[in-house]
Amino acid sequence: MNTYVTGNTIKELRESRGLTQAELAEKLGVSSKTISKWERAEAIPDAGVLMQMSRMFQVTVDYLLT
Image (cartoon, rainbow, N blue to C red; front, top):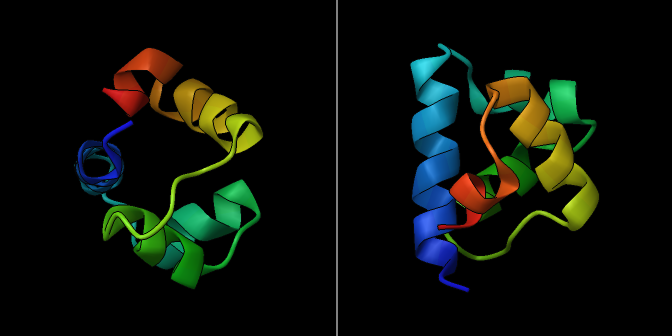
């Protein structure tokens, strides 16, 4: 899996909704540092968080990962 693509996708979706990293982190129950790591492609969300994000952003998990 290309974490760079996943990070960019998360960042684009977050920004398109006008959310800060802190706001998204609060909605997902993670720290803003975690969001930052995802967006910098240093880590990827686990399956449960990917499902949460897919519902929140109304996209498929596949979209988040590709």
